[in-house]
Image 1 (tube, rainbow, N blue to C red):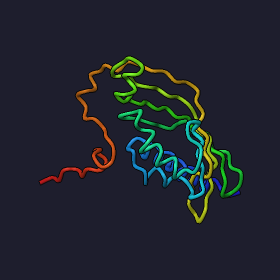
Image 2: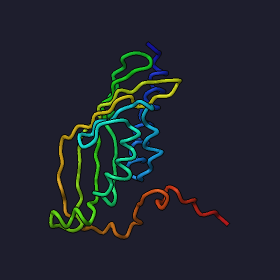
Image 3: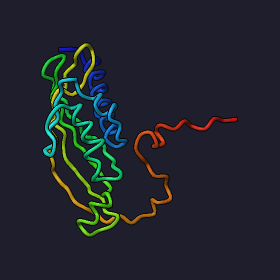
Image 4: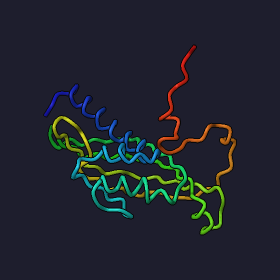
Length: 174
C-alpha cells in the first residue's frame, strides 16, 4: 500500500471527480459528466442503468425534462482502499431539483423543489494514472417535495451550459 501522503493525494483526486460529477449534472454538461466515468464505467440510478457515458446523455438531455434547475453536493466521503489503484467510495449526496412546469401541472403545485438525500456507492479505479468511476450505484435515503417561495429571486439564477455564469468570463478591470 502507498504511504500516507500518496493516499491524501489520491483522495483529493477522487473528491475532484465527485465534485465534477455535481458540476456536470447541474450544468447539464454532457462532456463534463461523461468525463467522470471510465469508458466502460457503469451507473445504476434505478431509473437508468448502463454505461456512464449513456447516463450523462440521459441525465443532461432526457432526464432533465423533469427539472429546470438542480443543485447537487457531495460530502461525508469515505474511501475504503482495496489496493493502490482501486477504492470503494461512499459519498453522501444532497440534491435540490426545481420541478419543470409540465411536472408541476401533473402534481398540482407551482414552484416546487424536490429535495433528495442519498448516497453514491462507487468503485473507483486508477487507470493510466487517472482516478475515475468504474461503477456507481445511487441510493435514495430521503426524498421530499417543498414549496419554493423565497427572497432568493434577487440572486442571479444559475443555468445550463453555455448560459450559466461558469462559462462567462469575469469582467476585466480597466
